[in-house]
Length: 222
Image (cartoon, rainbow, N blue to C red; front, side):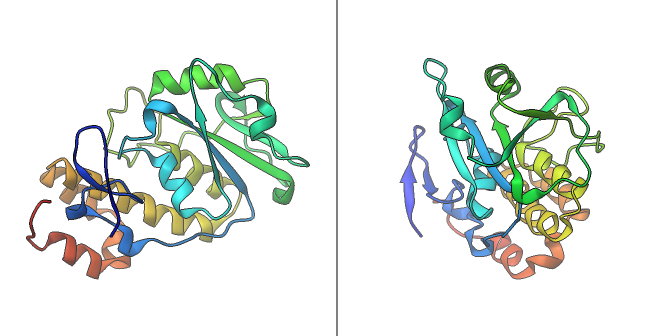
């Protein structure tokens, strides 16, 4: 397994960014979707193992990553795909359109802390159609403090959009990858009780039993 050294000198998997002890790449899969998705990720988010925008780029076929630098943010023409209507997930947007031709749609996700996402949102607000997701209840992401109800991880926002658009199988596959990502993140930080509570309601118990058994096996931490 390839590894890389990041700023805190912890050995990490180059793909999932988790320490080798909790690497989840054995369950990696490429998910095909008729919906084209791009992620605008804040430069500070690039090395955060908790980033679910990077998860979307890892597993969703055809997705692209664009880095937002505060001093020089990317222009629209670098991100918008020709011939597609650009949808930007935004809390002040309109409801998810019904009957849309998904082959003509591009979705842009913003990945960063709440403050970073707000700055990126201001930058891209005039680029396309602002789409607001319905409130889907409590977030399943326990890797960061949810400051208010209705705030979700980047990958969760995409999950809700996929469900609203009727892309059930794509949503199912991405949810498995998302929940495995959250679980590994909790175990990485030593939140064993919280991780086990999370696992009770998670579909990854049935989807990845062998991987979970391997993760739970005592091994060196390096």
